[in-house]
Each structure stands twice: as C-alpha cells, then as structure tokens.
Length: 461
Image 1 (cartoon, rainbow, N blue to C red):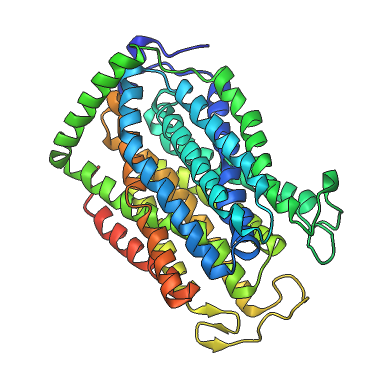
Image 2 (image 1 turned 90 degrees about the vertical axis):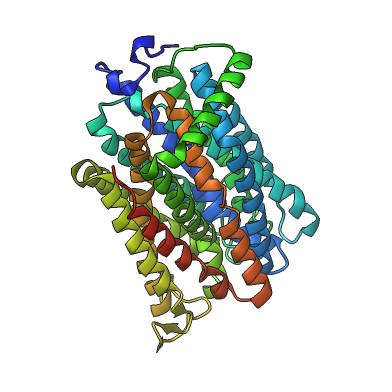
C-alpha cells in the first residue's frame, strides 16, 4: 500500500501529487457511497418504509425522523474525536474500512423490512441508523485525504467532480432498482416493463427491500480501487498514543476556535444549513409520497431526474468554486434552496402557488398533473443547488483549516453538520405528529436556510 511521504504531510508544502489513477480512485468513493443516500434515505427505502411498513405516512415520517436524529447525535459526538485520533495516528484507510463495513452490514439488514410488519420497525430503524453512522464516518476520513491529491487551486474541481460522480452513481443505482428489481404490486412490472430479476416478489416489495443489499454490494465493489491505488497518509504512532495526543489536540483546537472567527462562523453556518439540506433530502421523497400518493416507481423516477440535475450542478459548481470562490457558490446555492422550499410549500395535489389545478388521476400517466410537474421542477432546482453547496463547503473548510489537522477539522465539520442534525428531523417529526400535516413539518426548513445564509455572510477567507 502506498503512502504520502512524511515531508509531504502538510498539503500547503506539498509539491508533488499522486498520479491520475489515484485521484480517480478517490473520486469513486463518492460513487460507492452514494446509493446509501439515494436508495435508502431518499428515494426508495425511506418512502417504502413510510407508506408500506409504518401504520401511515405521517407516522412513518415521524419515526424515520427520530431514527435519523439518533444517528446524527452519535455522529456529532464522535466525529471530532475520531478525526483528531486519525490526525495523530496518520492513516485514514483503516477508519474508512471499519465504518464502510458497518455501512455494508447494516444496509444488507434492511432486507428484513416486510410490508405491514410493525414488529420489525425497531430493529429496522436501528439498522438504518447504524448504516447512516457508517456512511458518514467513512466520508469524514475520505474527505480528509483531499489536500494531498491535487494542488490547492484544483481542490474545488476535485470536490465538485466527486459530488457529480456520486450523483451519477445514484442515477445508475436507481435505474437498476426501478428498471430491474422493484415492480408495481398491481402490474408486477418494473419501470422498464420487465418482471423483477431473481424472482423478486412485487406483492411483498422485495424489489424495494433489495435496495439495502444492493447498497452494501455496490460499496464493496466501487470503494476497492481507492484502497488499491490512492495513497494513504503515513502511519505516525500507535492508536493508544494517538488517542492521548489526538484528544489533547482537539481540546486545544476547541479552545482556540473562538479566536478563529471566520472558521467558527463557517462551522456554525454549516451546522445550520446542512441540517436543513439533509432534512430536505431525507424527507423529500416521503413528502411526495404523502402529498401525491407516489410509490417507488414515481419517487424513483423523480430521484433520477433530481440526480441528473445534481450532477450538472455539482460539476458546474466545482468550476465556479475555483473561479469565484467556494463562499459565493455556497451563498448562491442557499438562495436557490430557500426559494425552492418556500415554493414547494405552496404546491399541493390540487393547487400550485394558490392557483387551483386538476389533481392527479388514479392510474393516469406519469407526472401528468400540473402540481406534480411543478414539484419536479422545484426538485430539480434543489438537486442542482444541493451538490454545489456540499462540495463547496468541504472546499471552504480546506481553505480555512490548519493543514496539519485536516482530519480533526473535518471531524469538527462533521460535528457541526451533525450536532444539531437531530433537530431538523426531530422538529419535522414532532410538528408532523402534532399537526398530522406533512406540510407543517416541512415548513421549518425555511428557518434553517435563512439563518445559515446570515451566518455565512460573516465568513472571511
């Protein structure tokens, strides 16, 4: 296994970089991890859980929110600690391997989620939460490898290309599930008109449940090149020594953070707008399922359209990142998200922006109603803005953080992205449960984007 030379440990002093194959292999981590977010938390398994396993969509949205909140709290508490230990120990790949294994095992366990089986809900939600922990922690350590891969002036394009590649992976995995695995229970046919592969039973939603094992297998296959070809940081000290040194460094970093005003303001802004974005992606499919009565095929097709928009958005955002700076890219993305969420709250199955329209007809053509088409347009704007927002955020962190503590600060980055991440899902869950209205639950997201934008304006690179 290759490693970065010790004298190249600080990215700011590095003058040589690994070959293109190493960079491409690193980029494929995003491709490997994306099906968890695309298939499980957004477009296939989450809506399936809300509409077919939980007693009703509102209860399903609430329970899912509580599970995501629990995972977010665990990620928030452990991310900076693990990042600090990784900086002190040096290597990143062992951490990626360990948390990747957790993602694989927990994702495969989702196969047990049979429709209407309320007894299976607690272990199912536990598996979802553990898969989320695995995916997020593996991403923390993968992000920390970025500064050693390309020169500083190309970090934006690297980050944007990674996100765009991830979106394409999401598209391909969605096409596999919708076109060949998940079938309409009424017709027994997939989106492409085939009977499900492997004899998957549409009546028991085996195609939807197969999204879990597919996510695990997909990760194993496509993360392997990163382990083979991308150089790791050199090992510096044993884990026990790294534990003491890492915790001491973390304590000092937290003590110094108030003096680093721009970095502190950015981490606080990231804490708030990431909470809003993750909640928006997590509940977008569930909201559509409850509002329009969409099932897996409609929601999955919607996901493919959004992922295509996100691919172009992330790719273009990466170029704009290097050209105008990550902070402006983040600000523009947040404005688009804010306006789109506000507009979505004014779309119902029989109205668009206060204008009455014909509701969807049962058994009608795909996305035939005006309200559904308006939701798709707004969803595309969200997809196109979400990619650049996340890609530019990790670029801005690299510009602001000390280079010799990059994993630690990506841990803090994950902390701020997760420490309040339970608040968004929790508020959505509580408000939805209290009002029995999905729209009321989603309205809280406007506050997150407004506050995040205001804090971002205080950041100075």
